[in-house]
Length: 328
Image (cartoon, rainbow, N blue to C red; front, side, top):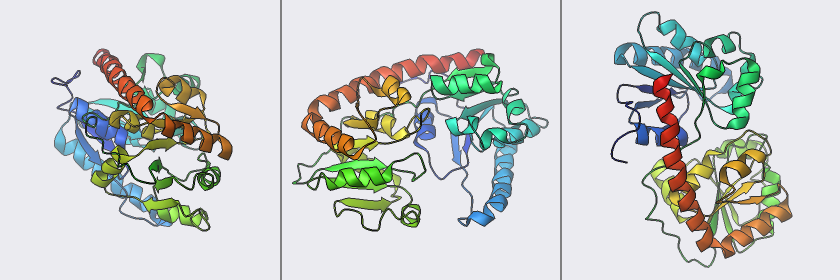
């Protein structure tokens, strides 16, 4: 893409996490200045102190960079509160990149959450179900804009799937309650000739008992560096994304499109509507997952083509949607 659809060179995007593909993909297309601001503390009981540090870091970035617009990822739903206060000292627009979790308890119950969203210039939600949820909360529809995750640009064309005796399925996980990990492990037992590489917080997986007694063909990799993760993504025979909750979009689905990889997803309304033309949809049962993965492996070439086609179409549509921000 030669020219960004919206001039975001003077914008600042802040997310209180270590890394998030959605933000990086948008930055690669729009060119804003991106800052991940994770907590300096790993211990849960120190999290409030971490919030204080993150708030100070955010304030310093906004006041010293003098941005035209500030984009923030929510949750936490009190992050837009900070920007509303900082706008007393600097003039800038506010874009709230609002994930589905921000629209439901407990995050939706943070005092003043609705009020500050209605003081933002744009409230971005990720799909039509989140749009309706935001409207039910009382967010001004004139501020709402559905902006799906853009497929990561510049990832196609160099996939290197090894023709190994045992291909691998990439399964990025957060190990939150909506992910049917135990069902996944049973599905893996039914596919002993296939390796499963499960990325994400290994300590959380261990704490929940998933690693103990897992099948030998399941490898809990933990977090891996971005360059290694991208190489793993490009080399996957199939990418698998699972959730039991409606409204969850699954960033891994767009990652798979960007890399042109075969894709298998849980059969939810949102995922069917967004990715049904490329992905195979599976019920969250071990027989369903194993059978769908076997089908995806057999239809790998076809599914690669479908992922690439949807990626190209999705990116063109995404550019047109983001242009609407200039009118808000």
